[in-house]
Amino acid sequence: MPSKDVAKELSRRFCDPSHLTRMACCLPLAILTSAVVAKPSVCWVDNVIRIGQDVELQFVADGGVLVRIQEAGKEMAPTDRVYREIGDRMHRLYPGAMQPEAVVSKVILSDGEAAWVSTGLHGACTLTPTHKGASLGVMATATMSMGGLPPQVTSQFIAAGEGRDVTP
Figure (cartoon, rainbow, N blue to C red):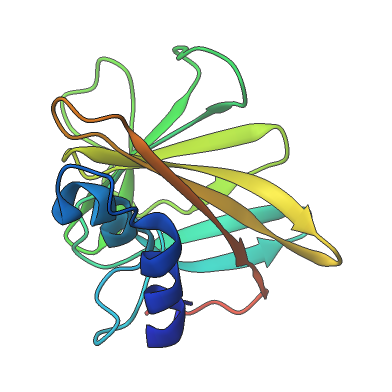
């Protein structure tokens, strides 16, 4: 997870003074590095846990995230898996269903898939399983769009822990 020094470095690298407003240029950092004083997160991800060759995504509590997992590089399809955070737990949504399923769902991302994550504001993230050296994790790519300004895009690798389950 990013530290205060990492947040400062990201700010220095990605906040170009040629943008119209400092707020607009730094908004992707709000997605990539949430409040460093509290527990930091990247794209609303609290933990990434390795499960064999797959990863489980755990999101910050009460982040209100919506997650759509689909085949990487493909358009949306009825077979996509969709999850919504309700309270502090993820629940799977099914096409045509009036309510999400009652049981808590684990959000598992496999090779060849991509997860689109958003809170419904002006930004979203794409999470893709990635190997970086010997580490398995996800590449988080945040995109922030503010009216009239070009989209801002930043990326960061989040390494997966080895099977540690921190779900309360």
